[in-house]
Length: 106
Ligand code: FES
Image (tube, rainbow, N blue to C red):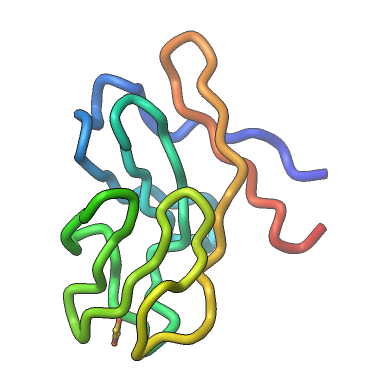
């Protein structure tokens, strides 16, 4: 089972903000939705655009390239031109630090 990896402090990401981190080969976008933190792979499943710089609308991130939408909490796709979800990573907060676990290969 993959270990938890410390990636950021909670005060580095304000509500409505995002931050890109790397865990081994995974590029991950962290989001703060009103004080709850979520982590999805930072690669749009339509054509590979990074998602972290997209606009957050409600609980969705809008891909800045062609406008596909994904649920930040689950990675589920909600609007084309993407049709596949992005991976949502397990996340926990411990002592003010955000930790991610890359369980993609378990
Ligand atoms: S690359 Fe994201 S919608 Fe096309």
